[in-house]
Image (tube, rainbow, N blue to C red; front, side, top):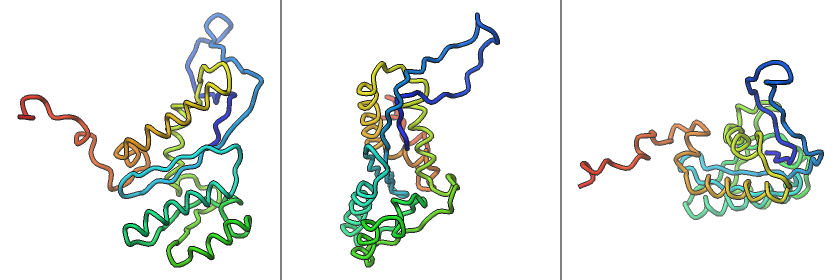
Length: 186
């Protein structure tokens, strides 16, 4: 997910013309960072990281974390990834060596190119963009970065919401998250 200081615009209804038309400030500073995420389809575990670029090292760190987590549970890690060059063995020597090293404990499935609906983390990024970058009102890029970190921490603490965002069949119903009324709690 790309997080840019230049706010992403969303559709907003407004009256046509100068008087009623809404103005959106463009800061002229288009610095950006990239968010990387890994979600467990079954329990909503989320690992979110921020990096200055789309690099293979962050991807490899996350895959290694998934493999370590799966090993603890006695399972093989199955990672669904897009075809970004830094996620493939053809595009990155680092990924190639990681895949060779972890071949007994890891299976990577690549989604078709240009198919964001095939990779459910993209569904979570839609929410993240809306929360963090759409029409934000931060005056500096340095003030926007903590918003990304806080959002990732909030996702890590609310696995049920993460599962609902990605459309997992293991997501609990919203009613299960709600606290019991006082009359029923006793």
